[in-house]
Each structure stands twice: as structure tokens, then as C-alpha cells.
Length: 310
Ligand SMILES: Nc1nc2c(ncn2[C@@H]2O[C@H](COP(=O)(O)OP(=O)(O)O)[C@@H](O)[C@H]2O)c(=O)[nH]1
Ligand SMILES: [Mg+2]
Image (cartoon, rainbow, N blue to C red; front, side, top):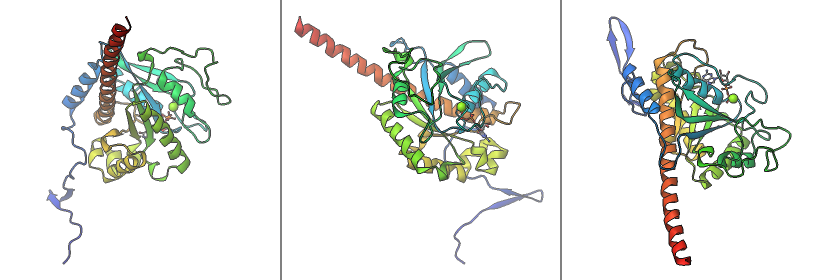
């Protein structure tokens, strides 16, 4: 007998149970304590105070309907302690989101957390956000709440163009949002557009990650319990696929299941969303550290130049 695939089952009380699979990404045990730990870490997140930066901006980019606005709603729900839908979401031909909105997240006491999830117009081909607009967004030139005009690109002549953006108005991490169900048959033109955007983000040295939404739609085990996400072969395959497609390390691909049908919070959905959120804050924090070090070097060399000139 040649064994090519072996699954081991145990029998308990006459029921057939499957032995647990090895996770493809390890995390501590998912329970209330872990949820509290993640929550506290995110609440206590503080970007570099030496640079006078009190909050970081994470820009969500991706095609319409992928779950960008829903991700903000999910994170906001976790901290609000109830399902919340402040960002309009749903399905519409050209997308429901047309404005640049840096959403804040508040805890129950009313305190605001030190990051903003920036929602914006979808990335469509041939329409949608264009590369120049993306550049202005990254650079902080586009004012908060600006409504994109599908008939004309944003340009420096637009009223409200921020000519000298502060570090706090720039983007500190880019989050490409894709849904797990559609990654296997993405339009080549769309992939190409995303890669062009990626090159721009890379050139600016801004960290990037991918949020892989709707994991409940590609695996029944995950649909029935979100905590199965890191043992699901389908989700692992989707993560590998996106990692190859966009040339990013696998730990930059963050699976989530957004709140969309639920009317009560679910600890497992919340834990997965917070794991993604914490990772994004780590990326932004590392970037700001690099910026800070660069500024220090620039200041030292400027001082040397000043001395030589005087
Ligand atoms: N099943 C499922 N549906 C989702 C998930 N995230 C978002 N959706 C649904 O996908 C649709 C589009 O979401 P939306 O947040 O408006 O996408 P956006 O255009 O990227 O902002 C909505 O009907 C959501 O309810 C998810 O994780 N699972
Ligand atoms: Mg939206």
C-alpha cells in the first residue's frame, strides 16, 4: 500500500472528530484575555512624540466593494463595544465612498485612539483614483473630507490643496484591501494598476500591507468560527497567492472577517481584526522611527553646513 495522504481521526462518544491541524501562522490561544491584551496594546499605541506626531494615518486603497469601509466599521465596533456603522458601506456600481475621510476611533470613555483609518475612493480600471491623486494623498496634499470628482482629477489649482502638509497629514502606512474570494481571478489590468501604485508607495519608502477581507466566504470552517482562520488551507492559499501577486512578505498579508451580518460582537472576529490593526500600527511605528532617524541625520548635516558657511 502506498500512502499519499493520511488523515487521523479519533472516536469520542461515537462521534467522529477531526484532529486539529497545524496552524500556518501561530498566535497565542484565542480567549477573552488575548482580546484584552490586543485591545490594550492598541489603546496604548503612541507614535513618536519627539517628532510632535500624535497620530498615524493608514490609507486604505483597493477596488470598490472589497470591504475598506467595513474594516473601519469593524475596528470602530470593537472599541465602541457594539456593532457600529459610521462609514457608509455596501454595493453600488461606482462605490459608496467618494470622499477622502480619515476616520477616528474612540474608546467608550470618549478618548480618541492615536491612529486614523483613511477611507477613500475605490481603485477601478480605467476610472477610480488615479496615480497622481494617490501621490497627493500620500504626500498629504488632499484636504480631509475632499470629495473626488469623477470628471476631473484633483490638482494643485483645487481650492483646499494643502501646499505644505505637516508630517501628521501625510500617510504613514498603505493598506491595500482585497477580498479573499476574488483574489484568484483578479482582472490583470487591476493587478497592473495596483502594482503601479505599489511602486509609488515603495519609492516613498512608506510601508504597505494587504488586508484580505471576507475570509468567511472561502472556507466553511472559518465561516462557522473565525478562530479557524490560521489553520484553513484555503486562507493560507489565498495569502500565498496575494503575497506572490504583489511581491510582499506573507506576514504583510492580514486576513480579516468584517462585521457585516452580525448584530452582536464576536470575540473571534474582534481578535482577528485587532491582530491586523496592531500589525499596521507596528509598520507605521517602524516607518516613523526611520523618518525620525533621517531627520536627525539631516539636521546634523545642515548644522555642519551652516558652520562651514558662517
Ligand atoms: N461576508 C463578508 N462580507 C463583507 C466583509 N467585508 C465587507 N463585506 C460586505 O462587502 C460589501 C462591500 O463592503 P464595503 O465596506 O462597502 O466595501 P468598500 O467599497 O471597499 O468600502 C458590503 O455589503 C459588506 O457588508 C466580510 O469580511 N465578509
Ligand atoms: Mg467604501
